[in-house]
Amino acid sequence: MDSQSIMELTNEHVMHTYSRLPLALVKGQGARVWDADGKEYLDFLGGLAVNSLGHCHPRVVEAIKKQAENFLHCSNLYYIQPQAELAKWLVDHSAADRVFFCNSGAEANEAAIKLARRWGKANRGPDAGHIISLRNSFHGRTLATITATGQAKYQEGLEPLPAGFSYVTLNDLAELEAEIERQGDKLCAIMLEVIQGEGGVNVADREYVQAVRRLCDERGVLLIIDEVQTGMGRTGRLFGYEHYDIEPDIFTLAKALGGGVPIGAMLAKEQVAEAFSPGTHASTFGGNPLACAAGLAVVQTMEDEGLVERCAKMGEYFMEGLRSLGEKHPSLVQDVRGKGLILGLEISRGARDVAGACLAKGILVNAIGDRVLRFLPPFIITEAEIDQVVAALDGILSGMASCN
Image 1 (spheres, rainbow, N blue to C red):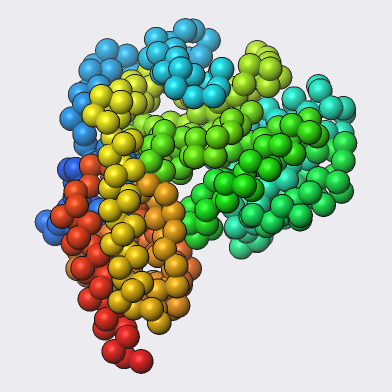
Image 2 (cartoon, rainbow, N blue to C red):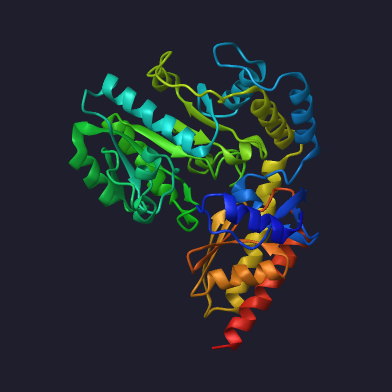
């Protein structure tokens, strides 16, 4: 089937919930993908931070094949070996003591909200179910997580929204302190991303995150960190919170954890995890053998091949390249920000046009609004491939500048 046929079939039968680019991808290998007509693209979006090992990493593919031949699904009424092994790896390598597995980042954040509220009511009082989150955040598309998301555009038409959420501005400590005072005994948790990916690659200040941890300790409330996009090495550390020398009470994972197979995880400290008991939360497919076998292959490959360290190194190199664009095009480039290989290039205008021009050159990037370009390449990316993208951006920005 060619690209046009795939697009026509999709448009006829699939609900219109995505603003899709005119591109039908059918194959991926490493940092490259191909469309149904055979055209090759350099993937600097990585399935929105999912394909951190690149497409079809042989160890992940082999693990999926082996597990599929042996045992695809098992109910959580029974014990599941790959689930237990992946949980142990995550606990051994993080600040958490226990794991709940699900199927996506939204489900992981939904579980975090439920756990925080159960903990709050058991430890702070019957009214302690309020959660403070941040403006420009993004936590998922379920009704609770879209309410936790501090962007009104995603909530439009979904009213009435669940009660018990309020929003503050990233890096504004005074506003947070005032909101904590306002909520008082109703507060159970503060929820944040250390880098707001969907919000424009906005990085939390070190002092801010450390102050949030201190305030949570002083007030006896939980700190939830959404690591769905930043986790599993994306920032150049295994988890984004490690950059801030703090530990969350709860944090969430998805995206890169499965290497392309759907999986989510909510992790918590022991004394918080105890707020869940049998029957208080569940997932039919959460922690299934196939997803956990893929997850084990992902984490073991990251560890064996030093891919988190490689992400940090390639991120520094890419950041230098993007900053060089700022020196060449000061009237267009406003900011370069991020950590590791979650990077944002803020320009004065035309981000969607730049992303479209990159697509025409065979490069996949993402525009957030009309001012920010987001880059989420796989950790296996090379300096030569980074140079290719920087050179393409340089040419596109030069063309924009000459039109002024």
